[in-house]
Length: 333
Image (cartoon, rainbow, N blue to C red; front, side):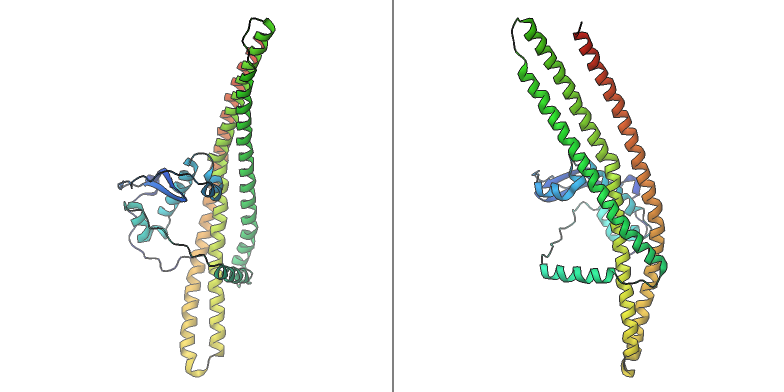
């Protein structure tokens, strides 16, 4: 849930005008070039130095070029800019209009604190809810989070396999040229012609498989990745609400056990916690309703785009392979 949100007037930047045009890499750090309606000056380009570690962490968004990553960030920023609550946050306005890149946050690596936090989160995640709506939503989200993450990972595995097949076809296409031999012998000439034509076929197969993999990433791949992130975001929101629920129940118990001299103070703490909890529940229900509509719409768009792209690629490949077939038939006469 959102706490201590500094509200201001609506954004001076319209969501549909936000574009992420480029991403630059400097070691493990990524710098995104974000263009908003006010078109702030662009920061200086750092030296590009690809890191295998960074690529591994990015998963789907680290495949091939950085364009899918830019598209994903662009979608996220547009949704933030059009969000009823987040768009009123002054930090969002500054981020979208300032030419200065945000400062990097230093991550503290303390394994004992992380283990303690993990145990505490696990305890609170299993806490029984007092509201059937939220208990059902938590149970449903738990299932969908696992399923969406699993299908995104499996789809990524498929894309990686397609890319490997494309590379293998390219290698075989190049290797076939090694079989071409000069000479006047008719059999040698015929064999060389077959090798050259067959090399062209495998080159076409390579390009086809590369197009199929690229289509998968830029359409359904991004859609599945976004769906997984939606579920993770809802899970985090529901967890924060559960934490506040635990805080409310603790405050109530403390009030019941408090001595007369501390009773008034404890009742005030309980009242504040209950008010915050009621507000969180109200906002959470609105967010859940909005999320369901948005995620269904975007996933539907991803599926339609995926079908259209792959259908177009299939038609182009069929035409190309038909030409190769006609060429081979011509060689038989």
